[in-house]
Image (cartoon, rainbow, N blue to C red; front, side, top):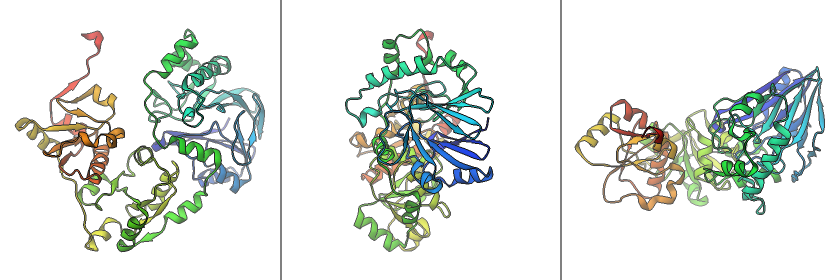
Length: 470
């Protein structure tokens, strides 16, 4: 059976392309749909169906544009109520894709409309399940996201639905089925996903905590809800865009591709209150950047960090980008619903500098020099990595302040002395530095290379000690 997983690392997202005898289906497409159309052309195939596993929170699906460009039917599972034409499948309804069959199995829990698609090959043999956010490799979908949109859907209610879906719909299926989830490690839609993106259902029954047949429903709910972090603030907006619809991706690209001179760029920023988003490499940003611009580089987890830190998808944005990467920046912003892009700076930061405009820098220090500072002084240090990273090991006496919550703790930073900021490799600490500077805090130094370089030069660290070894 031809099942192609199309994985996008930035969002830890998997879309799927299925084809048989000139007929194709796409499941959970990203915002830019031309790659799926091109893929079908390679097979001389027509896309017949666009299956959606649920109303996604972490990205804006490309189902509407793909439907308009191909005439394919959008399919949702039972209880879905989209604000546009779509086919609402019945539980256990079967759809034909060439010689293949796709069976819609209603599996509420992550959301109420969540649906798993059972793939049946040309020999009528069950091949695999595309599980959306119902079942991941090593985890299951978090049940607290839909409550941000539908108030009476508590996380406890959804967790109970998910328990029933797993026990009554998923676990009775054959062990040799391949599990094809919607996300992998790094996605905020679960809490403990594997870096593997496929597995057999039988193996998942053995190793996935959520499929432990000895767990009671009450125990399952308790385990599932334990340790859930606050989801990114942009998630509810993306859900509503997926439910109600959105402007064409082509229009977003066209509007965002408005080139502006330095004077025009400055005028638009002042008139619209746009966030100036600098997407270059962190070291380029450190050497010089537009004052109060925010750094979130394309060479990292760009879209999730934009969503986590800017939050309001309607926020006007102006781009400072490397040559040849404007379309990439606009595309990756649109994937998480940031469509209000007012344009970009022609010639990038060098044009701004050559126009004799004011600019700022970030003071940085190499790890070896940082080691000398630690040996000679008692510096104030902030580690902006995730809590789990900090708990595993960190620089002695370093304070912890996770980047995702930094904006809520601006008052915690000293104003009367130099302090040092680091992350794992330098990407997140530069984001932190740009936020600090935008808030008027300039008395910090970034540790170039982050914790990886810190360990290499032998700066003293403290490591987590497992309680069982004490």
